[in-house]
Length: 145
Image (cartoon, rainbow, N blue to C red; front, side, top):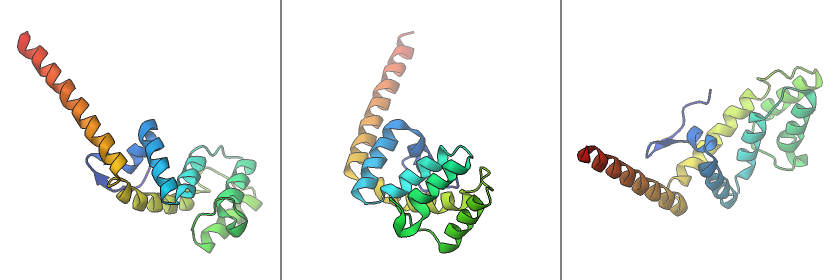
């Protein structure tokens, strides 16, 4: 279960990450902020299949410091703990739990700025207009009955 995240206008970070349209918009915003590695890491951890190969791939992509393609900013202790677990083949589903907590915290910070982004505000306004139209149409149908 995801930790509590910041809220605005009824939309939570976890809802943004689960909704295809919002995740695409959030991805674009993460690219603008040069924070795409956090989102990519979260997505790969979500798809983690519990194998040594998959754990090693995630480690090398995000946790191997300067040698990583998309290095994320986490503590050296967390990096070393994950690497030791991979080396000992202790790759159960919680191997990346501390990494995921750190990444969610960083994504929450990005999200706090995302909800003020003009593209998100435009989308939210359009969604509200559609909902109001739908509710108005439903109310008019009820009145006719």
